[in-house]
Length: 143
Ligand SMILES: CC(C)(COP(=O)(O)OP(=O)(O)OC[C@H]1O[C@@H](n2cnc3c(N)ncnc32)[C@H](O)[C@@H]1OP(=O)(O)O)[C@@H](O)C(=O)NCCC(=O)NCCS
Image (cartoon, rainbow, N blue to C red; front, top):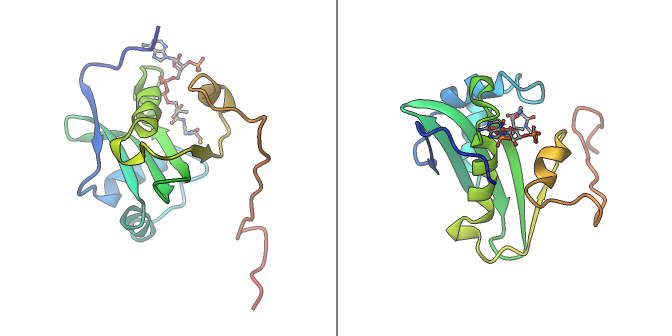
């Protein structure tokens, strides 16, 4: 039985999301807490699909996709406000991405996560490929 989404929460494509609202969510995650409004706004401007979960005018969840709309899509920054977790919001966000009308042709969705069990329940597998990461904070760029 899929979890029931808290009735007050609605999920929609982001249209004019203000990056400062997003920072309140990012501040709850160790991997995103040092992000700035300027960089987050640039990230929003260059993301292909952005979904938000709202409780009224309060942003309570977020997820975004970078994609070619045909072969590959990567899912990034899925996050739910701590006080709204374990109510089905995260599951609904990911399912909305996988079934999004602009992503219908995509043959492979990819993500990196510290929560593999959450994504396994949504059909993701870690067996087929090995993900590798190049991190600016750990490497120097060639001049
Ligand atoms: C990972 C994350 C996005 C999940 O969001 P969420 O809204 O809590 O997700 P859901 O509520 O859909 O599912 C989470 C759990 O709650 C359970 N759940 C869902 N609805 C429920 C309900 N109505 N009652 C009780 N439990 C419920 C789910 O079964 C799931 O159980 P599990 O932890 O055993 O897998 C959220 O924990 C988060 O933002 N974490 C911090 C950021 C992060 O780590 N992001 C992922 C890195 S890529």
